[in-house]
Length: 70
Image 1: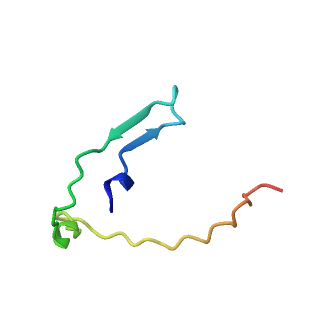
Image 2: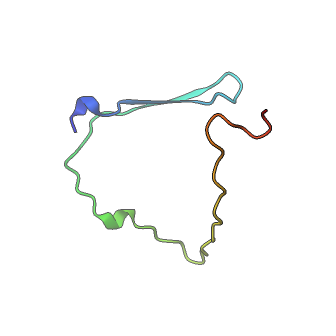
Image 3: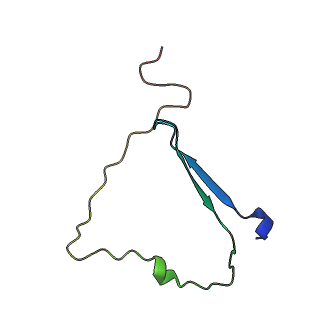
């Protein structure tokens, strides 16, 4: 990927907070030569952790239709 297609700035605006504050992160000096082993991304649960079973969620309503709307 060429550097001109890489993200350079990320702006997060908290629209629900008074004054709509934002956070700005600037990215630079990308290094594409780093070789990271897959094991670095493997989940290692902490001692004593227990797995929680997740229940399936019902399918969402089609776009444009909201609950309670007529």
